[in-house]
Length: 97
Length: 136
Length: 144
Image (cartoon, rainbow over all chains, first blue to last red; front, side, top):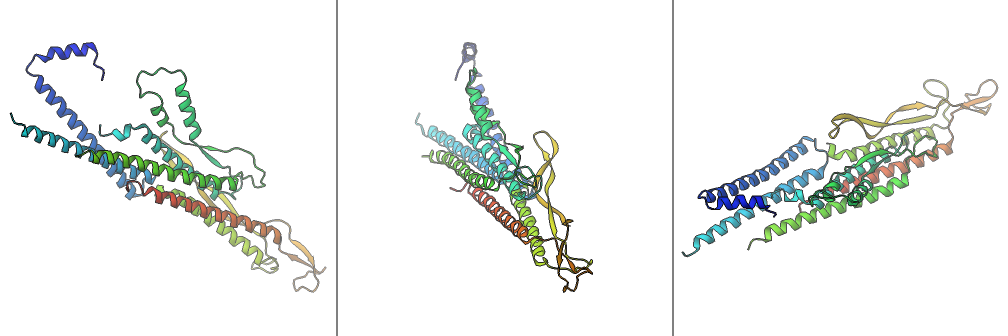
């Protein structure tokens, strides 16, 4: 990941402020929301493809099946990431301070 | 990140090739159905040649500013095209369908399609394996 | 459904060739028929085919275009070529000079056409099987 010098300077500037933590949380939250939306979009696309198939309007069969598979893979990935996040959270909770 | 499979160059190429093979199947079926139609000229599907041209063009002296700009994504944009085979015929009815050629192409295309499906399936299985075996 | 278009195209070929076979069989069976309902001897029948086209929306260029959709039989017409004149005074349909007008059917031509129609029919069957095998293989996506 390339961080150019200007960006580095900007980050160093914000290091000292107290809002640093909140910024990080918001960015992560936004990223998460984005990804969940994308997963949902793939599911919607797969549902649309299925509807077209049933209505008899799909151009070919393989695109419907592949759309379903892609949606499934994205969902599985999201679920696994969620599991990992929960695991790490629990791990942190168990830490003796 | 969740459209990781969409960003996979080979997967996109496989999908494209599948569509091309499917269109070719339609075209071959149509040629065979019209083998005795007077003045019918056979249709052909070009895809692989266009793909080769696109890939070789992208290798010739082009500057890439980003690693994704050349090669993979260019190849993914090639679509299959249907063109008319305008070659002359020796038949009296003006039909230029060579039934033996069409049958050979039919067999080859069927094998190609089946192979592409298998490869796509393999890719999906591998990704699924990686996703699910990652958990301890 | 558009997904099964390949099989429909092949089946149109099968129908057309079958019609042709019927025409040829009729010609062979009536090779010496001198009386028909319209009067006069039987005339050779020919099945006429035409490429079938349909209008389809081209998503890329966003306009309607004509695409191939197999073959269709536009009709069965009668061959206008000369009838054969056979000298046979004893034939009930002979004219004053003893000539009978026989159908303009050459058995060898019909045989050749029959072979061509059979071969085309078989080719269409192979095409249909190929399409079916491809679609069945497609169903394996996602399994294991």
